[in-house]
Image 1 (cartoon, rainbow, N blue to C red):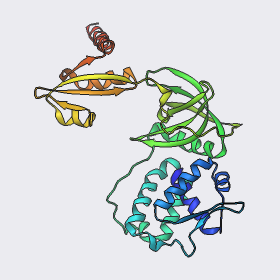
Image 2 (image 1 turned 120 degrees about the vertical axis):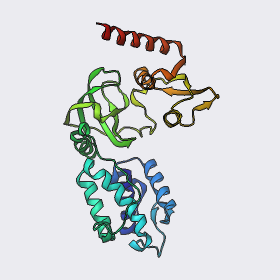
Image 3 (image 1 turned 90 degrees about the horizontal axis):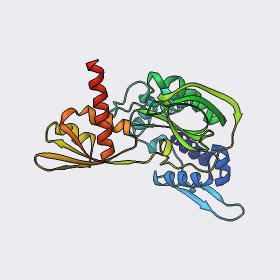
Length: 298
């Protein structure tokens, strides 16, 4: 993971006189371009990295500079420590190792001597727990994984994927990789995966994947909603920065990436919301309401 790699690169710079971007890329199994970005981040964090050109060029820490625990306050280390603790249950041993290293720098972290004002919970749900650790191991070993996948519309398919990274977003874990079925980069929600298997099939990482890769790269739907001016806190919370208060009503212009998800959100607001556009989404809502009415009448 990125934080682990940044710490690893910093340790490499501390223990070696000079190291090249190519050596770091090989060591951490990422592209040279990623290494350059990581070195920029390390510089921005206040650790001076000097570059040298030429045949014997490379990167090293500024002469006379050294890193010790005095460079980090207990509050600095506490934020990193509790972030990693929030991930420890999901990812396992590698995160536990980093947690113990931070604890050795500042024992107060391990015995509760530093209160934590920020709660960060990146733990895995019941549906995700059995998949996170094998996915993490498959990424490190560069092994193809196979699994059954159910998309947001309920469609199921069998996938073989070259996984390259895990990420956590808004309470859910995702895995990015190259899908051999679709012959394209894809992002999969871990909770929708089942029957996961790590195969013996190796793969070579492909070109750097886009950080903005979307699930199945679906087309966004532009939606105009009109709400009665009631239950305002929830409306403004759900659609932050997308609301216009018109006095008697609130107009919302937003994007959805799945009609099924759009309808689930709209239905959750009950009768206080109207779909102004697009017309086909209005019709889908009417069809769904008719199906609900028919079910209850029968």
